[in-house]
Image (cartoon, rainbow, N blue to C red; front, side, top):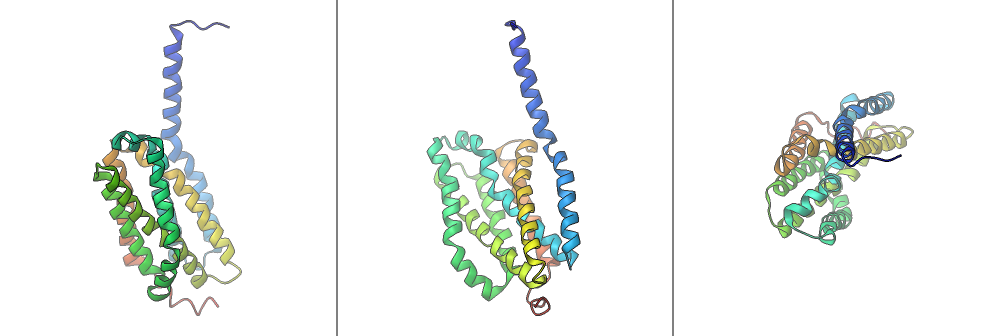
Length: 232
């Protein structure tokens, strides 16, 4: 079978259109997945408010964590860097995440999960806001380092909430369900770059999710210390 020269541009245009259409429909494809996870969480939850902000916290965090995997090409163009320099964003973020684990454990014992999760949301908001504005590579690396600090505060705090609010038999299920919601956050990270008009608005949208989430945690998240004795 032969393809005429005039048909090749048309086939290429159709391929790009199909790819863009699939990317635009990705949020719609997530709806049944999120509904199934919500049902699973509701079946095992002893407190609906707790599980709502618990799952949302980790989902938003993984959304930020995966932002560079989505915006990598745009970052390379914006900062005029090579592929190895681009990989440094992830290396810096994960290094800070690993180094912060012990200090986070100390802070968690002293201040509790709610305060650390609020602090994490504030740090993620500041990091993504700064990342949307900076034009230099070193400043962008600093913003990703701050994001690594905020990321490090979250998962261990979420596990503490699970241990505080849920009976021992339900804790493994709730931990796994929270991890599944984090996987949804990695997919949802494609939404801002699909919908936002440009680099700055992409990361402003991501920063906005943490700003809203910090406010929700401040006014609606229950204290974990009161429930510790009840779950034993």
